[in-house]
Image 1: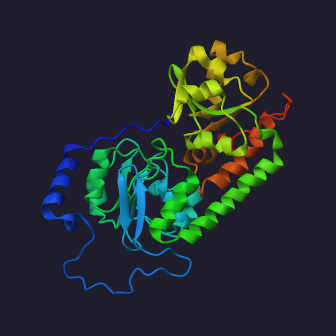
Image 2: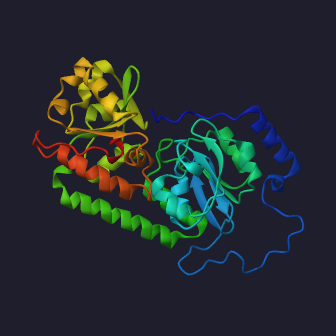
Image 3: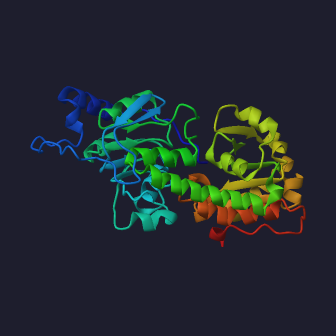
Length: 358
């Protein structure tokens, strides 16, 4: 399952914060005692860029970015994609999937180029010492679930932009993530252009598939004795909603303000929808196991071929979970035809397989 665990600072991380505070903020930043006085023109916005300073509000208050950052560290699990899309190579990244070099997925390899960012954490924990060692100018934690202690530790190292207060943890929409990072980097116009391009792709998909409008759909992931269903507060649920699908009311009620709802195997009739996207470890083995669950296997969504299975670590499956400005084109190209086959009303139409499972 892809649920991201909460993070708590380690004893060594707490010691790092104490050292930073005792020595002064510059001790854990990128300052240079011998540096020349700043150029009055430094940091001025280039044409198409936003001016500095920039103030970003978030769950723990607000953070001011005084000038365009050079050394960028991403603690948010997917934040590196927007940074790369805007032409900046982060010096440190968080490795969510732990499956690709430098925590950069296939769709972002070209943007990465020859850069070799350091790994500063995983979904389970942040390596605060590694973050500090990179002497970042800014730390991005937008697609994240920072605790107040995490934020205190990171902001003692460098200006830190935490997840927005308006959404659940790990719930920032891809377009807001991109635009916020664009503001931080001084590349707001470029961010707007990227968002507009992906927005057009969504509009084209809706226009090409009017049957999506009002159809019920869920993105789900099996657990040992339950199924996690992702709500519209989560990027996976939001993807279906943007295409026109609606989450069944009972599932939405179970999720509330959370990014997912766990339903027991006795409640799997809630998955009787027009299309269910399954994120599976291994499609060939996990989907038959689901069909062996009596209450699920007898549902019409199974009998009528309305399941859309993707493998967690395939490019399409990874894009389903990442949901960034760089991964969404992959997702729209790959998942939309599968969804269209699922909801066309003809059980004889096979759902195309996830290309990564063959």
